[in-house]
Image (tube, rainbow, N blue to C red):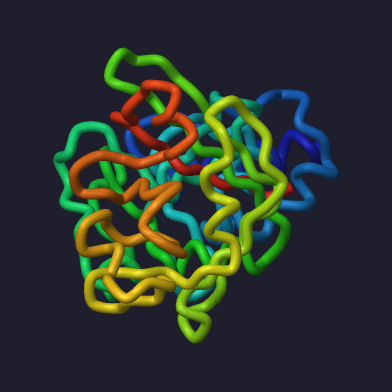
Length: 245
């Protein structure tokens, strides 16, 4: 009886306050323990990320998440790939959005959450500093061949650290082109933090550059993922997603 009442409350609240353009499906056998863990935040409409939304059996789509309680941001939640619960932090596939942006635009986020976008470096920091997050990168070439790279450790530092990258624990079949950037600060056209005299972002778009090689998924001309490229593939589409564990 109590479980049914809680299910009813959470279903109505989440449907009216969180989801846009799709339906939330709650499984009838959700446990009291699961409800207990998320009831307060979901009733208040402040899920931290898509992993929390997965707990209440949300479907893929756009949600308002709250990496920080006082500031929400719209994000696409991927609930169908590799177990679901993924928060999309970057998506490129049709060149409809210009990714050659300045520091503050990357900090705050830009683009179309239903299309190409960057969630925002400050939001990525708030998420990845709040617990253990893994990163999954899905890459597709012009012939629609697909590869992926997954990292068990993914942390983006705060603005004071210049959104420094901590990355490790690679697995996948796309090759490891991001560990090379471990420990690097973020670079944009108006803020150069790479280790060479020129600014890599001017030609290759904002990224965690050491030198202008290995990876650059915000390249205005085409995504760069070195180990995939040397196998004869040019990346056409990229999706970066994170999940708490």
